[in-house]
Length: 185
Image 1 (cartoon, rainbow, N blue to C red):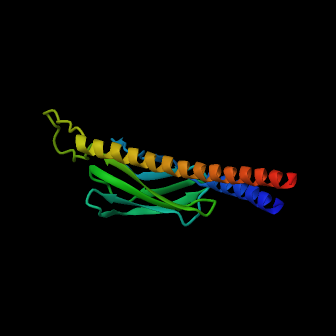
Image 2 (cartoon, rainbow, N blue to C red; image 1 turned 180 degrees about the vertical axis):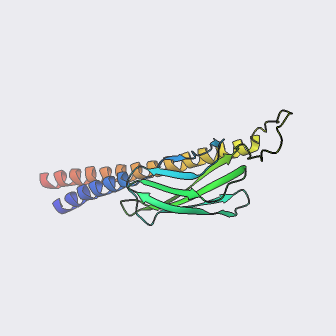
Image 3 (cartoon, one colour; image 1 turned 90 degrees about the horizontal axis):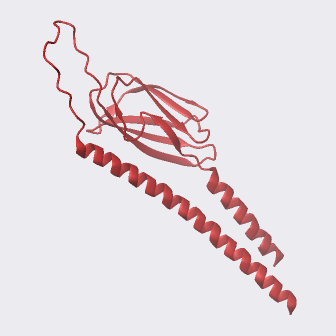
């Protein structure tokens, strides 16, 4: 019976440490749901813990066409890459896949909008004011919905881990109760 008790304690400690060891995205440039208002040359993703060298990301436009990214590098917990071509204004997605220091693979998506001033050849000065185009409201709503869904997924993962720990604590308490009851006989 003592073996069961010790095995239960070991499981609680093993699973609780494992659950806390997973990494996640800490920040990104561009940020999730942001509107970038200047030319985008470099993408930087920062994670909560060190990530493996095999970690990478891709960029796609609103038509899911790939955008060329050069020089993707990993430095501890930072993943960076350079956008080789000048991007047109529009909606983009960064699809990242990493392996955390704990060996756990993770992936995610960062949506952003590029609304940078277009480069104009200096042929003749512009005499009329340029109309400023506001970002499409449905794109903003879609990005807000994506952020809310990501937050719900993270919360569900945390609730699952807490549930496992609670079940293991209950098993431990029942084992201790059974041992004391058995010893009294």
